[in-house]
Image (cartoon, rainbow, N blue to C red; front, side, top):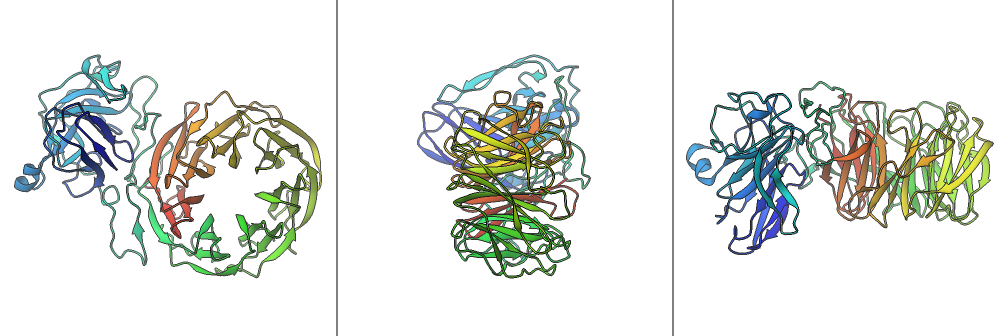
Length: 578
């Protein structure tokens, strides 16, 4: 992360919001480009390490905030620094900075530094006494950025005040590894590169982007990198880019060759599917193409549509208003595409089992003729199921899920202001009811997902609004296809969001959200916790990420993320690290 800060002051945070530096007015004598990046060069300590450039003197102390899961004794947490002289003379000697404040509830430590140090990290003072129950109240120095946003102030429960001694025995138990710091660019895999400015290994966070905390102000520790998946652990590492085909606009995960999970991309630039074979350890092979699709592919779905036990791919083709089925052969290849008409003006598809059979089916939303069409999977390919008229203006995206609690898959089409839902009867050739209602505040929606977010057995819905850069959330009320759009405020995402997927990434039973942002070139992970989505991670991707899929690529029992990058002809893999 880079930012120019001048004599007027300002602040800069690392890309994962773990480290924040606040420069008071007068701290810098001229405009200076400040850079923060993760690093594994210094001696390992309790927390992640960050390199700061340049080595610049300051006229006023810099306020340093470190947000991370704290040690077992939070009172032992101190911000550590390595200055240039320390690194040159003593091979990276860590020193504890004077502490202004410690918040157990927010999992943060605030310190001051009288110069801009080379490295910052989190130390553990193993000799520190434990905090009193519930913490203590104290007053820390108050400061803010030039816009008036407070960065520290009077502390509350679970917070300690200033600690100017900065002494004590420091633990050097190493949890920092190469996965957490600067990415390796060695020869681990052909064509492998790492994305810049992602986060290191980490855990889930509260809305402040910090570690999880318990409701009584105590701390709920999460153990990442110990190889043991545990409920509530949200542990991901910096993304790695792999070459893909030309202009991948969508991505899917399945075992296409009878080995480990593989990655398939819909390559609009070359009008074909591309397959990147998985090794089972999270790495991918070189892309294999040659599986032709239609002239204007728009979206892809993955699953077993012919019932032979091997995954296939369906592709929405807007040039022919059809869905193409490419049957997988189980050896990493596909049969030639077979097209099935789907209506007039196809705009979106969704995959589900509408007829309660061994084959998956496809739902298609058509803008020109104002219909929703079901195509049923079977041994002979796709065949026409039911067709239904949609409400006026319902012409953007379509989703599937059990919207009325009867155990059968239903469909929901979303437009700029309204949604239209149909209750499936389990046959794929009929509906038992339908409903039309306003869709929250409305918007320009590019993707919709249905799932039981809060684990209350009632389906909820999220939709990506590219006009406002938000994720609109509708919580199911228990009525048929009925949602409360006021219960959870719209979630701010990155610039020009392009896709969203719901998945339980931390094993706690509820669903988290993953959003790709084509304008800001990143993928954001939002953890559902306490009735709201909180930003847990933001990872850099390739250029113009256009789709995201979830699957356990490294076989550790925890889902990983795969992002298709249309602008850089690549996929970004973000692996779990339990």
